[in-house]
Amino acid sequence: MNRSFETALAAYCAPTLAGLKPASLFHWAGNPRELAAWSRKLSRFGIGVRSLKRCPDGGCLLYLYRVRALERVLSDAGNAAFLRSFGYAPEHGIDALVKRLRERIGGNGSFPHEIGVFLGYPLEDVRGFIDNGGANYTCCGCWKAYGDPEAARRKFAAYRRCTERYRENLRQGIALEALITA
Image 1 (cartoon, helix red, strand yellow):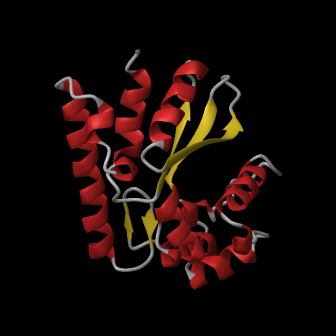
Image 2: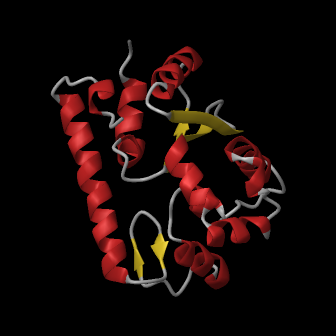
Image 3: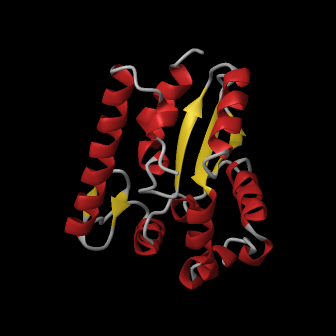
């Protein structure tokens, strides 16, 4: 099997595959059969893959998520109340929430910044980004942080180390499936 999808997963989703992060987002313009095959493989680990948007280059924006971890994030009272303000209905479950996110991404042309909650970013940072229009952040890495910059830097560093570990293991010929945390 072509390892290009494996390479994309290692590069963009390693913290999610390792269980450090509930979800990741990345662009994929490769073979749809390869995507389907990996979607089946990942489901055995409790990981879902959904296309959120078709892109002009023929690819798509993919959302990869750990079902149980995402359920915990989205059922958090603060996150649920925040998402309700954007028309989400957390009580309808994860599939309905992801469907609503997909609608919001494909909607009026503006990107729905509440996606940060779906990616496991702290609510303080998601709210801060929206309220400040992306300015006045305390630190910038995997996302713009508006809270404790040291805590954010530690998390960014952990994600970076995880990604490098996954990429190096792939370079050494270790199959991605062997690296996924159950």
